[in-house]
Structures are given as structure tokens and as C-alpha cells.
Image (cartoon, rainbow, N blue to C red; front, side, top):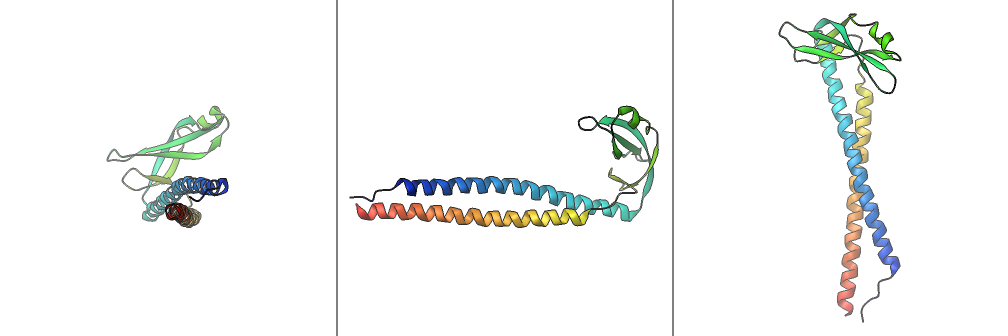
Length: 170
């Protein structure tokens, strides 16, 4: 006569499996955040390097574009003597296109890297904040990985234990 499994044991295993799936989904989300924060950190470090090198140029506000639901953003552009184009977002968001277009043709100072990357001269780094978010997301990612491993081991042991009992009792 075999061991009768109860609905409680099946439900408990199913809930652990559901928990494992949720941990895996959470892992993917955390991995995405860690990737975004780390890439942001390295981008900020590179921008700091551009600023430290101190190569400046004068760019011109050349375009206005919608940015979000009812706001507009200005863009600057500079083309160096080698034909390398530098462009990026400039200034605040404007509530009307007309207000943003008042800046067209305005000259702005930028730092350039010689490879197409530029930043405004009044840019301030946020490396500390980005690094803190990166560290927190990596720690959470590690904790989630531990949770996945522990839950997987528990599910595996439960199934192995059930199979062992069924085989021995027949």
C-alpha cells in the first residue's frame, strides 16, 4: 500500500513553485535595473573624464522637439573641423513650442571628447547617486539569487523525499 499524498502537500509544493517563479521574475527585473544603473555609472564616469580634459567648444541651439505630453525640449549641435557631430539636449522643458523656439540660434558652451560625445559646461556629475543605486540593485540581485537557490533546493528535496517514500512503501 502506497503513501497517500494530501492536497496540503501538493498545495505546499505548488506554492513554493509559484514563489520560485516570482523570484525568477524579480531576478530579471533586478538584473535590468542593475544593468541600467551600472551603465549609467560608467557613463557618468566618462562624462567626468570629458570635463576633466577641458576641451571646450561653442555649440548652437538648432532644434526644438516635443518631449512628453505637452512639453518641448531644445537641442544643441556642434560640428568640429574633422566633421564629427556633437549634439544633445539643452536646457529645461518648455510648455510651449514658441517659448522653446526663442532659444534657436543661441550659443552654448560644451565640453567635447573628440569622438562625438559632449556635455554642457555647467553639467554636474551624479556618480555617487548612480553608484549607490547600482550597489543596492546588485545586493538585491544577490539576495534574490540566494532565494532562488534555497527555494529550488527545498522543492527538489521535497519531490525526492516524496518519490523515495512512494518507492519504499510499495
